[in-house]
Length: 257
Ligand SMILES: *[C@@H]1O[C@H](CO)[C@@H](O)[C@H](O)[C@H]1NC(C)=O
Ligand SMILES: *[C@@H]1O[C@H](CO)[C@@H](O)[C@H](O)[C@H]1NC(C)=O
Ligand SMILES: *[C@@H]1O[C@H](CO)[C@@H](O)[C@H](O)[C@H]1NC(C)=O
Ligand SMILES: *[C@@H]1O[C@H](CO)[C@@H](O)[C@H](O)[C@H]1NC(C)=O
Figure (tube, rainbow, N blue to C red):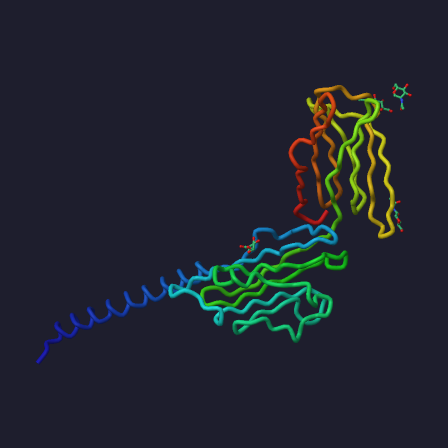
């Protein structure tokens, strides 16, 4: 017959096992929750009118056992619009509730879903596509929703021409109306005369000519920027040609003005 002391002793042992089991369970839960995420590398993308844009969304796919397509559901919706932008569920696209604005214009990168890629490809961006898109993911290791704010602009790199020692930059598509500024190699501002021409769709063509004569072997920088995009382009003049130094760099402004 067990003594009172023995009962206490075994009771303590059992208690220690139960408590350590609970602690392990809590740690495991906390770990799996902190491991799960749904996030975007770009919350404020700028689409270029008429071109394709990717709305980035990714999640942690791993649940320890590898994730199967059937376990993942991804829904893209746009705030203020009925229906879905795109939906993927039970291993296939589910488009019967798709808003007609997005018919044949959206897709996911299906081959990469099991790697955690829930990004949306939106084709041929229109002005009215601007707005807040929500990416909702439900997967074994991750569950959540993020908002991606798409803004739409038109932008294109300028081409440079030189005639009679004046340097001109011409860019075909800009919207909203940008500012154009020039500087020399040392960064000093230069005066230019800039004209905007409205095409039928209300998109602006820009022609900007430096006022002062340019010198050979110098490098000139032209910056075209509006509230959403900044394009920095350089032209280096040599005897009989213009080198447009490295392709224009575009920078997106990440937040609403
Ligand atoms: C998803 O895949 C596409 C196509 O490979 C790629 O362009 C995009 O950057 C990926 N997005 C993420 C969030 O991994
Ligand atoms: C070229 O520049 C010179 C001096 O700036 C000016 O006198 C001349 O009229 C210009 N020629 C043309 C064709 O613009
Ligand atoms: C630019 O033009 C303004 C007025 O037209 C003038 O005051 C200024 O000196 C000019 N700057 C340069 C760098 O030529
Ligand atoms: C271009 O045209 C639109 C209307 O077609 C007008 O509202 C806009 O102000 C014009 N922009 C410029 C820079 O002339």
